[in-house]
Image (tube, rainbow over all chains, first blue to last red):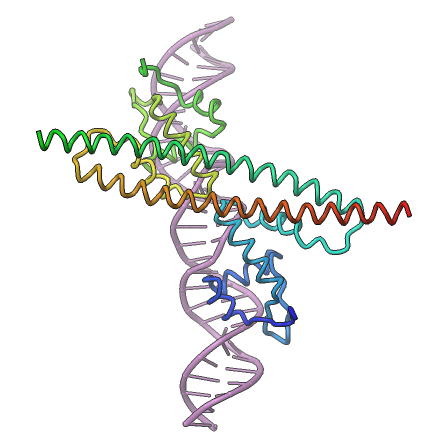
Length: 131
Length: 131
DNA sequence: GTTAGTCTTGACGTTTACGTCAAGTGTAGG
DNA sequence: CCTACACTTGACGTAAACGTCAAGACTAAC
């Protein structure tokens, strides 16, 4: 298994991206599909990477940052020092993500507060309209 | 209170942004400092808005999106239908943020899994080196 | 009165992340 | 053989979010 590959068109439909975007990611070394003659064949590894790419984008990371993050995964058979460096970088990224989630939680809380306030204003207007 | 204003330079130091960025945000109608002659005077309202702007950027929102989000806050004395529309938009944004947090939590979980895996690989290498 | 510092408004430049042609290749169908 | 379709590689265009001058105004300090 894991031998199945996908054409660029299949990838585009599956992930709702354009061919241009996929080729751009390849140029930036975020994806490395197999080349058979001219055509590209995307592997399951490419699919996994693309998922991470799109997720990273949703979180506001640049493609350059995402490229570094992708190196954290798919370590392969690295040397010890290499693995330690990866782990170190991963821990830093982990801290970053956790902080981001905390800030997000704070933002959600503030928004909820604000919504409560607006609901009170609405209720107040309702009372005065009825009174 | 809340009468205190800040120069563009003070704002830049306080928020670690450039004057160019602040003027750009003003041009995009994200900020509206008081104009005294030529100079700008940023109010506490501007500070609050700038905080939201920078936070929004960290979450990957565009300035156009952030501008809409800013309208959710600072409702003022709107009509009932206006308030209802605001609340509606706020609820949608709330859903979006909560979903984002869930995805972030998933990403954190996956990263933790991966780190555990890398740690095991490291431990394994240690054993073989010692063995 | 001139130097230094902070502010102002243009206006062009830059980076990122693609979009959008143009022109060609290769394969399958009628 | 011709058409249609999916793919390819350039190469130029574009929107967003500023950066980076240039040139001038105004204020305080010496």
